[in-house]
Length: 448
Ligand SMILES: Cc1cc2nc3c(=O)[nH]c(=O)nc-3n(C[C@H](O)[C@H](O)[C@H](O)COP(=O)(O)OP(=O)(O)OC[C@H]3O[C@@H](n4cnc5c(N)ncnc54)[C@H](O)[C@@H]3O)c2cc1C
Image (cartoon, rainbow, N blue to C red):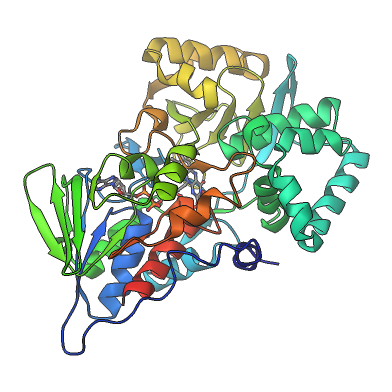
């Protein structure tokens, strides 16, 4: 069973993405897309291909949203990702778009090292127990045959409890807790077991951490905008009010501008959605769902070093130390210099995000000490982006808590008058660029 079938079977079919009555013959409808992230840009590209009239309103001063490529070293042209990093093997639509735009994708798989309980294990020196590997495989294989009642039961349990109830203990459980928490962006004690099993059962072997777009993932946003035309994108246009009536919709921005349209595609994350004055107001169940949904706190701290002291090109490292997870962020980018990203989640993200550069570096040093000794003499500079403080998302991506996967999302997906919703949080591939693209295209199909 793939994700789309899964969603259908869990009765999320009454979604916002259902088809709409078409417009009056002879009239060319106007569309407003709110947000120039991957969902908004995918919607725009679809509308562009259908020769439709549209404009994108974007609150930031840049395109790409949570895809945010950053040049860490201009001289060496070393590009790191402050937002989304990995393109998955199963992310077929994103990869098709890359092909279409002639954007090469490069292998970005990692081989994991581990620092746990004060001991450093290189890649190949650690593994899950044979017993647990066998059991976990069985659980993943059994996923597609779960009954509706069993899925419902799982949705009401957290992933840590599920693992533990199925015999995952000791070293196995500690590594799962570190690793899976990195995936979901908050502790797995707060993640729906159904959402997690869905993720692991349907993902590629490396859990969709497979590729990256050459030159940075932001290249796809750039290429789409080159196709549709930058004149279609209004930056620094934060939407503050949306008025809808039988005649259509009017959208007001913080810079005083307003725009009229027949239909709106709204790709705002729920935090931003809640800041908009809707007239008439959004339905109560949609507002309640919006308030119930939390976003993962992730802090990304790229660190530039004069040499790649970690040596392995495909290096990543899970730790039980404050900096949590590191990966080689300049893989495939030739230079003597290189960057590691310290990737922290949940409370650890808040700790890292709130420090000065100097304090952050000392936490990084403390976290790497057991494996690499002193790294200070190699260090050149750092950047930092704390998604928990981002004014539009207050987080990295949606986290479905126990009980929410089959209850909350269906309310958020419903269209409201002339407005159709899209974005990562509504996707079958939730939490991924692929999901953002899928929902953006589906919303464009629905309004056309
Ligand atoms: C740290 C991190 C790591 C990630 N890792 C991966 C990964 O490895 N692989 C992967 O596939 N995905 C990853 N993701 C998820 C991926 O980035 C998102 O799923 C995807 O980019 C979301 O796209 P979107 O269009 O739904 O939302 P966004 O990119 O957030 O786009 C929405 C846009 O709306 C704009 N907006 C919001 N409010 C308003 C307003 N009021 N007025 C006007 N504009 C507004 C925002 O500025 C934004 O540009 C990661 C995300 C983060 C943050």
